Length: 322
Ligand SMILES: *Cc1c(COP(=O)(O)O)cnc(C)c1O
Image (cartoon, rainbow, N blue to C red; front, side, top):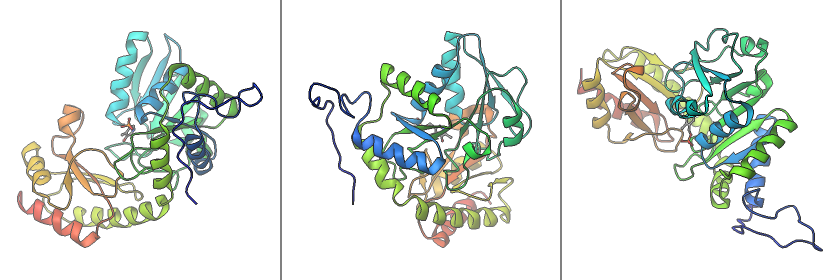
């Protein structure tokens, strides 16, 4: 039933010839099985990486050259922008655009997020597909159960599998799913040569997470929808952002002080970062993103706890600022 965990870093040749697995920097059987399942989920060829950011960095370094430009969705994952800042030293440039509209004409690679973290906007997939540049969609917050970007004209899907896919806050791992086999072959070559591969243990944890993905995301969607609705009716809450699917939402309270009071007053909902785990967590994003987000923006990732208990916890925390 369960996939064997093979921690080998090297495997014997067969009759003097390399077999399917030779050295763990290229691949290992546990990782290959996780890639097979992820490829099925998104409808492409999947490759695992040491983290979501390793996956994103590999896509940029494999498919772009110095002097080229990434057009990135504004308000999308903060870490992707920081990674692109880092790559500016190699003369890979980046600009931002509103992903609900058309990407800029001079982009060499388009980077959208479905839905964006923490603003929860969705890309205009049609406008992206009409652009000649390849399109990458970071679908971490959606998961393939809600959005399958390769079917909507994208060329690559990136997931931080650390989040919903692994789902238990105990595996740091990323994935790129390629639409075309030749892109997957080139990306595999880059990964093999530079080494940001996932370990067998991590792949095994991911496989275990994937076996419950559907029930987790269904429950998280149901609870997050109910909580978004109740937040919308709460007098201390200004804006609620929820795309109608998935376990991630964000909402604004008056200011930084109010946000701090709410995030430190919840008891069931943990005050910590990340998303997609079985335990609900909340945090003010301004601590990381500064003025890029409203000072009172709280990001909430809904876990598997009882929805009424979650709401009671939030209501009690919101009462401290009402
Ligand atoms: C967390 C996250 C990442 C980065 O993934 P890591 O596994 O932390 O490296 C990328 N994109 C989104 C949308 C994320 O939430």
